[in-house]
Image (cartoon, rainbow, N blue to C red; front, top):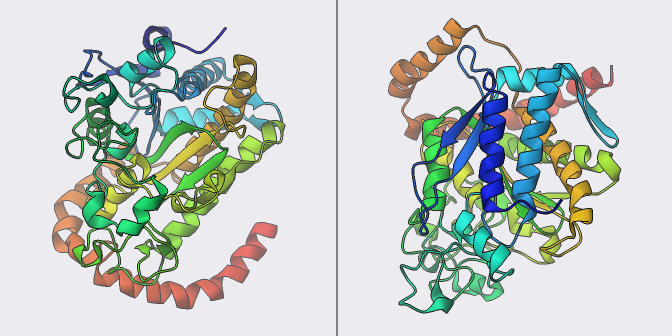
Length: 425
């Protein structure tokens, strides 16, 4: 066996949907790629009641990172087979019970979009292995060297990097580029590409998505927001929506830092550590957990613009009516190559799939709500809460956030020892 090609990925998704029709559904994405391909995702879940939580897992953004779609297809297959058979899952030294698998499939909608950039993958696997971008010719002027857009610089998060970042932050060549010849070419506008439009469509179609994972290669890292600058928890005015800080982002140890609440930051690190522990349990591979701005495998700061995980996180911060999303990027393969052999890839698949199951377990709601109460809660949010308390008041940059932060600073030091004692028991 070797890496799946574009046709095989699509066939696998169709086959899983046909084999497990009661707990999976083939999702047709509406935006065709530049070469006319239509992509699909697979929704895994029983569809019972009112879905409370959603997980979206994508891969294949960068064409040369071949292993991501294989990881996704194997993960979906494992989840469906285990649930149907009433069994748990075992990945080396990491295992999950049948009850845990049941809780995922029955209480979470898991959406797997294995290959968001099929044009690029086809070109990489058949013509030029190191190809990174999609195959959009719109900005090429007929020159082969100028074909393509980097999907992971095309999302609507600080996309206009020349305006929003400090010019010195561009020295590391990680942000993006306006040059179509560059591997980091960000396109003509945010969401100019079918590949990113399809990801956005999934968030709009399934607004209960609260967890997001984008699978990349290489390095062995688990990354969380933010990727544009150093995190800080003290000044909400320093945020990506504030034009007063344009031209000042992207450098460490300066006046600007991207705001994130202390609890959100702690949750991001905690969930990342849980995924890392699950991966390590398989065969001892240690994946570093870090803020994306400090990409460990890069060796220095790695500012980015227009990246998927930052955009997914930013949706709530820009508009608190939307669901808060815990977004991550996993960089598989600790050996720094885009092309592990298939023999090396097989244990990597087990590593990352073990982490993905743990990731989905983090999304399982703490309480199981009856259908009527779930619908009532949604009605309450939309009809009452969002109108009485508008986003500019209770959102992450509003006055309520400041009050909450003060309360947390007082209560958390008092409560933490009791919580620690409770866990130890």
